[in-house]
Each structure stands twice: as structure tokens, then as C-alpha cells.
Amino acid sequence: MIFQFYVPVYPLNQFIEHFFYYEGVSPAHNKERFFPDGNTEIIIDLSENTQYIYDNESLREIQACRHAWVSGVRTRSITIPPGRGSKMLVVAFKKGKAYPFYPMPMSEIADQVVSADLIFRRNLVNLREQLLASASAEEMFLLLEKFLLRQSDGALASEIRTRCIEYALLHIVNQPSVLSFQHLCDQIGYSQKHLINLFKQQVGVSPKQYLKIMRFQKAVVEIENSEIIHWSNFAQENGYYDQPHFINEFRSFSGFTPGEYIHRKTDTLNYVPVG
Image (cartoon, rainbow, N blue to C red; front, side, top):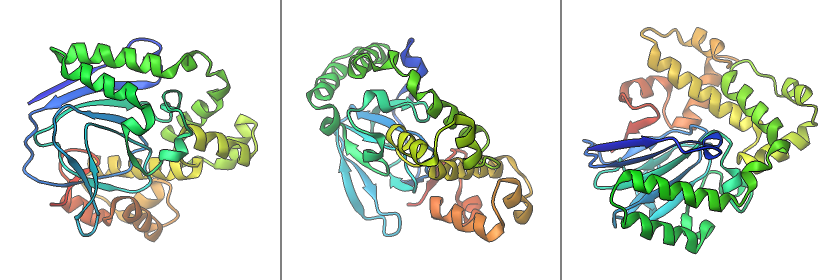
């Protein structure tokens, strides 16, 4: 099994968390539920296998993915293969920072997995051909850097106007259980309508929806780090009005109640075997 990570050079490292490559994964399960995590990714499969997205309830195939695809920010879980037999190269963007590389508002791919060639056209096809001819993961990382710098077309140097979204993201990610949306608008100096429109263009969903995702993610991490949980206290400490509100929102994002999640979860955060 191979896992290799790479942080790209400046200015890409201001927008991209890392690249990672993996192959030789052999999990015991065949399908897994992947929770909303607020992230956006480009996935390039260097095998010729077809990957599928499955219906969360029936587990039947509902979408086929081949060669390369993009995953927008999600507000609900999806069920996917665990990576067996794949050779994957993944671009993991920093939260809310993928927009300079895409030719459309990020809201157009929210809650979607889209074939990458529909977005990046022949450029992505050419990149994958170069990646397949590469001798090492290191060489692939450098090719990916060059591709993304070309794809941004100079947009990385002209993002001062978006500092307000960066500020909003920072506060949402760091304080999801206590943040007031109106207070955030007052601090930035924009109306709610203007901030919502800007946020949806660059991140994919509204600030309130993203706040819910981050609050859910905080709860997932807290569950992972807690030995004994008193659910009513837990709900209030994580920003929920009461325990029923917490349970309903947790089920909405994950498909499980918190108790069901505890019985099903593994050591891999945000991924739960389902088949």
C-alpha cells in the first residue's frame, strides 16, 4: 500500500491543502458512507476501473465515474467504493478556496460529482495522459502543479476582494457552535444578501448551510474524542438548541443517529462502512 502527500509551492499552497496519491488499498468492506466535510476535491483515477456512487438507502449504483471527476462541497452524505484496486491522485483544496480554478460559480457543482472533462475540457484529458506516463508520484505532483497554475490563469494574484469570504470561512470553521450569522455580517460590513451571494459563488453553499456542516463536523470530532457522552449536554455544548435538534441534524448529514454512528464507525473519520 502506498500513500504519498505533497504540499504545492506558493501561491498554490494558499488555496490547496495538499495533493495525495494512493494505490494498493485493500479494505475489508465494499462500500462506505462519506460524510459532508466542507471540502472540494479533484480526483484523478489512474486505473481503468469504473467507480460508482451508490444510493444511500438501497445501495444500488446511481452514478458511474471514470478517469477523473470533481466533487463539490456537499450538504449530505454519499456512498462510495473504498478505493480497492484504484490508483488515485487527489487535489484537496483548502475550505472555500477552490473557486479560482473553476470556470463557473462553485454553487453550480455543490452536492454533485461531475466528470472533470466537462469542466476542464481537453486540458484535463491531456494532464491524465501525462500522469499515466510519469515514472513516480513526485513527477505527477509537479505536473499537477503546472496544470493548476495554468488553470487559474492569473486569478491567484487578484483575490483581495475575496478577503471577506476568507474571514467568514475562518470564523465559521473555528467557531461553528457559537457564531451568529448577523454578527458575522456586521463585522464584515456587508448585507446578509450580498454576503450570501458572494459565499455561494466561491464556496458553493450559503454561510448558514456551511456553518451547519462545520457544526456537524465538530460534533463528529467530539464524539471521536469522548469516552462517555451525555447527549443533552453534548448537544448544547456543540451549539444545538436541544438534543432532538442535534439528533435530527446529525441524521440529516450522516444518515445515522449519533448512537448508530458510534456502533458503526471505524478509526477513519467521516467514512463509515455500509456494505
